Length: 414
Image (cartoon, rainbow, N blue to C red; front, side, top):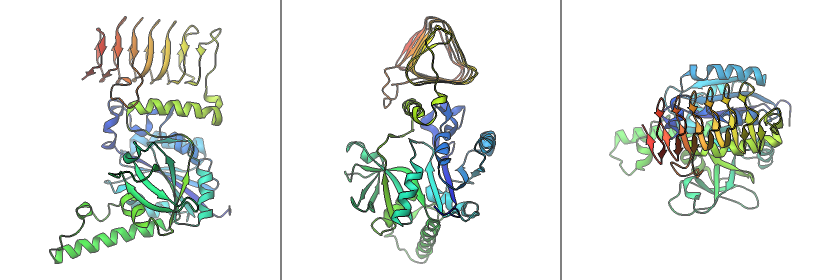
């Protein structure tokens, strides 16, 4: 790669109106900062960006208040020794309109390549390989794609690619009939030409809006009729019209890929990232055999400030955040324990997320069947929930600041 060829990365983080399916966990923290495998969700794509050669800058774009990201972004810039900026949209501009709105800032270093990533995607982000492929293809953009089951393909952007050249031939967002089992992973690399195409969509739409004012030309597609001119969607407005024009190509990942829409999925993705640490960051994984420290089974992350009794048994797939206290005889399996939680003697937590400052009493059980796709398949305790001694909470969601002194099964406690 030419040393002059700079790269920038843009991560779309969304906004508070977007994380509604992530309640009750998004009441406390912006969804992108929710910890998976002990690191904020957005940290996983960011640390993947760090592996891109000649990366000049990382931008986060969203419509959360700046103060919600200020601390994180400044500590991140220090840690990565790389400029990281949070850019707040004044209103939603769509997935392509957002980068266009900030085009002057994104292009100020004259980057040759621009990565665009969605923060609620969980994968191993093979960005350097993707960039190499993109240069070989010589197109305007390359999309990370993945094969999924034919049944689930219609929940995503489905696409058809040339099996030899990998050119994107056809693209449909959430198709009503089966198109293909190849889907868009929400990770892209573009040349700066992408901005010209976004501008074309805006100008074209403005022209049609003016035409409409002049005539009663109502035969326009109703879908785009009411969109503001500066609202441009990457999938419907850019990928679909450019497919088959030798401008866009695909790069297939054979590794894991998930979308983190619900709290249940965050538990599954935490497990995937913990497993990934075996390869990328083994120093983050805990170990112990019950003599001086707790018995650890499988992949477990324990924050350095957490206190865990040596008789506790932890794992697989457990992530323990800052200032957590785990007492004697506790058993933790497949769970995320958030900051300042206390888990008392002989309690058991399985397939659950325990919210900030909550406590689980002696001999209590907080558990679920572990079906990530089922609304109550993972038990979730919101912030500052108190589960008293000898109470069993199964397949339930408990909103913040509740005290449970009786057992509950398959309930949402408001």
